[in-house]
Image (cartoon, rainbow, N blue to C red; front, side):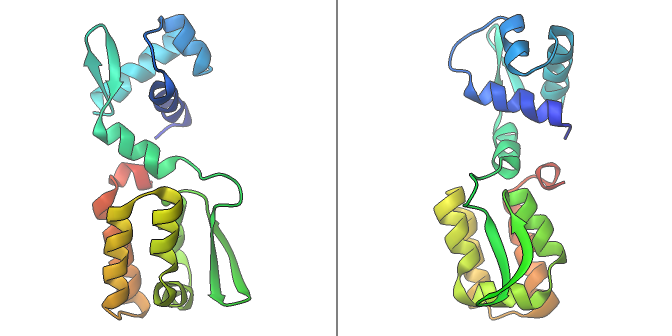
Length: 166
């Protein structure tokens, strides 16, 4: 998804009243023609829907926002190999978390899963109880290595649109 499209969705999610296109495009840091084009593209993609004389965010649009919106500084997930041994990999959103899980050394995955770190971060910071619960099930399965990675990525993919994770 283009940054401008994401910005349009973010502004749309924050607007609490009807506004004209000029005001909206100003908030989205676009000119009115660009804003309208992105709104139309997002509507065609199923991220927005026409609602009366305006537009609203669909569930698909909300999923994109949840997956790509960064957490506040200091709340990102820090990957470790073991206590006191950081990997240097950090995730500030579920999208970044997913991308990291796909590539990080499986020793790090095993370390965090055994401690319940993934589920704790997801429930405490991202407020996604369903995803945290499924990751807890992955912990109880006692998988390791690439099988563990595959389980974690498939759980995330079930909860988030593939577009949101790219």
